[in-house]
Figure 1: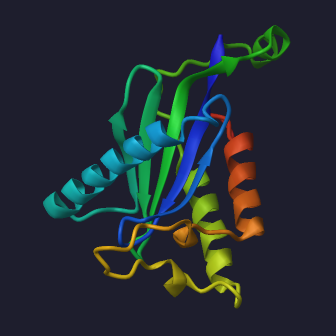
Figure 2 (figure 1 turned 90 degrees about the horizontal axis):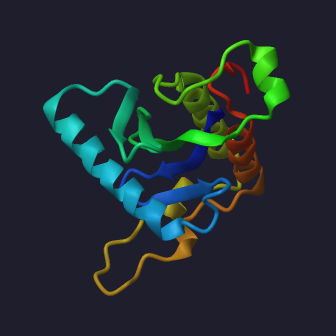
Amino acid sequence: MSGSKIACISVIGKGDTPLHISLFPPYLNSTIEFSFLLNSCLDIFEIRQKQTSVDQDLGLLHAIDERLAAYGWLTTTGVKLLIIIDLIGQPIPTGIEKQKGSARSGSKDPDLKAVFRALQAAYIRLLQNPFYSPDDHVPTVKATAPVSSSLQITDHKFIAEVKHIGETWAPDAAVF
């Protein structure tokens, strides 16, 4: 059997520019595929904002296939947090599976509120850093200027926190 795990965590700015994307094994070399998936999630954010009043936790945005599912969270400042879950995950060692008493399945909708709160707290700590300027990550309106990697968050502490959250999450985990 196997357990669900996080495949991708993304922080998207107000202008729908990706501020940070973290990929986790076995998807480390799938940057283009996940960029496409994240862009399709932004379309769903936009549709939901037009149709209803949007709560912070948007829950399941869409099931990409039988393996991947995208979940979303909208901050009050318009920053979007996206998590793509690998519902099948990696095999669980038989000793651990027997200790749990029951096998995990990817069919249940995982509760990701704790993960989103931890990500939002990490982002807030980043904003409280006096050396971080969020205005540097707002793209300027120039038709000829390509989107550069300077729009990405490069704070090592924030990146380490996101990596820790993504690597330690389990469907039954509540605290990070």
